[in-house]
Image (cartoon, rainbow, N blue to C red; front, side):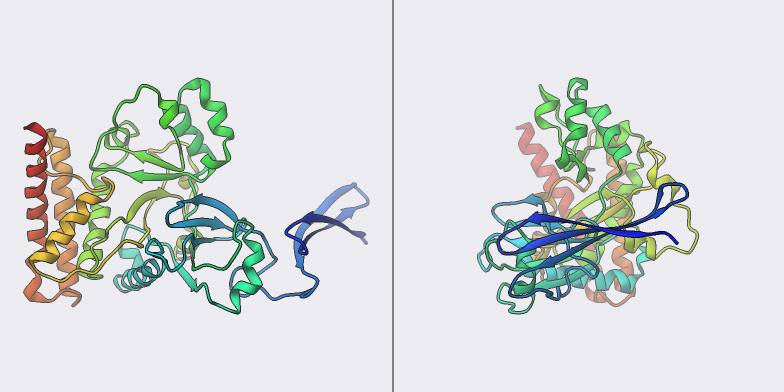
Length: 389
């Protein structure tokens, strides 16, 4: 019979709350080795010794930590050990609070991806979870203390967290694109553990005098020249992104304004959708060229509906150029980049036709996707001529 022991440690939080860590273990008295370990967090307040925390986490209690903070819009939090991420409005109810629009669009996009079949769409969309209003009198009293940076309730959006790239890939990017004298600093930096890689098919990187000043992994910009340097499949990226943009336009009837396309790891929901015994070893490789990564589309807070017609097409073109350069550009000087635009356009039109076939886009508007691409080409030509003048 192996004996069990308990140890208790107290962690100071906002008074009068306490967080208790209980470590349970069993010890094999024959070998002296610990056979099992389990960490349990217990949270209590004097007036509510054993509160029930609804929705936020199903087992145990953990404190949310800040991942990023856009001071004009929202802070982003995670609860370590869970697959959830939380956007919290910094100014709830104000013009910068766009979380409800984010939630509405996210739900609609998720339903469309389910309708098309997630296995048939190469770009992933995080699972939406729930929305909590600032005036919610049940959820916030039970959960506010778990957000140490918050003094009062706000509007909150919970979604699936996209897992950052592995340590091996992060350190590989640091080795390749950060000055050697700063490698240790960036590898030890906690902020660089949350690595998002943005896919910029519409722009090459601009040389800077000091890579150190510009280097970061949180929103690493994977420009076209870096994609080529890493021997990644740019045409495949273009095909996938065009497919998602067409669904946003002609099935969701959204301008896709300010959406992001990033490279990330397998998520729990992605793994859950796989066939049993699917190999995933290549997702852990250090070699970016050989490993499996997934393109994710996220951030729908600025998306807006549009009306089919001339004004609606102008809105789509404006959003196309307003966004970060995720999309290839027409009229490229290099043939390989013009080919990238051609691949993008072909995938976009094929997916738009799929929207017509599935009844998402009325037949009388079936020519609009082609007109949109033509208007993008005209606008790009105008911009290039203006730069050359």
